[in-house]
Image (cartoon, rainbow, N blue to C red; front, side, top):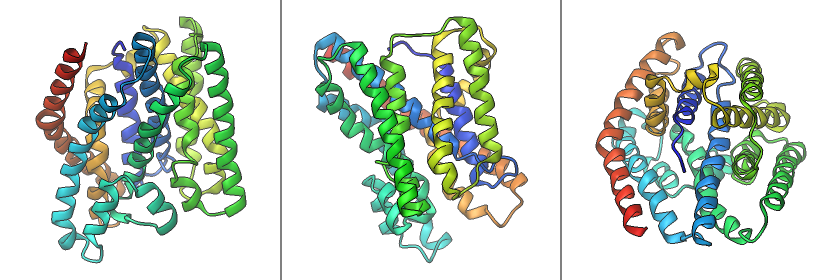
Length: 336
């Protein structure tokens, strides 16, 4: 699929909303919505890649897909976990670092956090677990629906989004347990499916309409950023609907029209570069946050954590992710 730098810009904004939230920066107490933006974006990108392969070849080469995902995601994660495992006995002596690292490395943090509230010091890896489960199952879903027309698949994904949203709302209503409903893969499917819906639906707005959708989406997300609160059940149940739709609107605006104010902002070179390294920023920021949160003022913690995370992310990107990206590209060219 054609590269769109605006989507990397969107990643950058989403990841720093999360960093600000974890640093407990005032007026950004709803910054966890950055994760929801990532989910919708992942659903869009992965579905676009898989559908393009189905259209081109009539199938999805599962082994190749899983290998490329592992080569992209696992090495930076293992590097962070190795560093955490080395310093945790000193910095977090009450934690069982081996258990924490094992849960995160095997992508079980989503359900571990939901039911056992572990591993607390690297709990941010729950979202990586959600996405990994999606990567495992979604290619099978795309294969199973490859014979459907675009219209039929669009309708199916629209229904899937409604069902997944209803499942989360029902789970919150029945159990009244924020941990249980917030972290699990099955209660977080709505955004991923919505991203897939954007990827397959044929409609794209004209430039003026795309700009309007972008403005409305930004407004909704800013309101959520300011008003949403940690562990609020209504935010998980009902607020998530508006965040999913607004994130979808941002992505739809970014992929439909160039030259809008939103597109120009998202494609500024520094923002795009931060988006390119956003995965590693996300990986590194939270253990650093746990070391400084409550010790220094949030207004100092946020820039300090951001600078340290960016520095580590640059090293990870330049010396691990970029070389592995070149390997993936060569393998893809060899497979053609």
